[in-house]
Length: 166
Image (tube, rainbow, N blue to C red; front, side, top):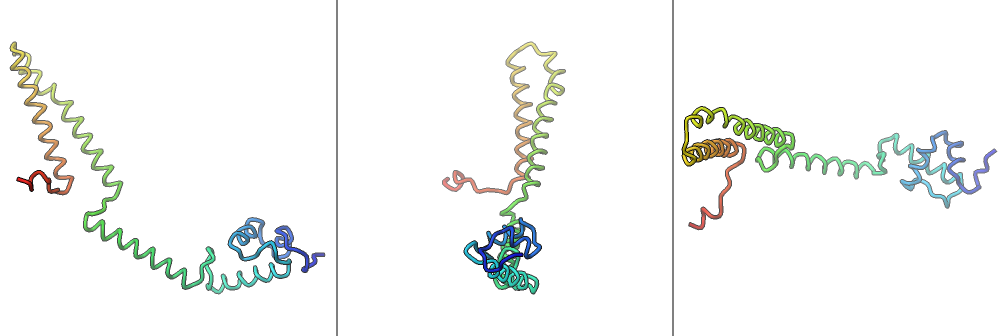
């Protein structure tokens, strides 16, 4: 037999309410009941809270209906703000950036890997190291210019402060 006037314990609340130990601990951390209460007061507080929860007046986090609506409104406002920033291109999805960077890196690798194929035949007939150097330099410069064009398509135009000083 449980004496309802004795000091509350989690074990007795589990036995009295039929709730799990974890649920009782969660209610304690949400301050639905306190250790200073007697068993009757704690059980009453739990039943009252469960009734308010079932009626939708209180959320799982302990917020009342007004606070819950305010929380939802804040979440909706933040979501809308992120969508608007994305539409203005002030915000870019990380997955899109990863894909663009991967494509650009693949392009860099592929472009540099094809240099030997393009210059091997002309270099084979050359004897002057200056001409060889010039040919290799032209190929590398061409690859870098092509990459610069590819990157400029990915990135928005930015005003260079050095251009505005002149």
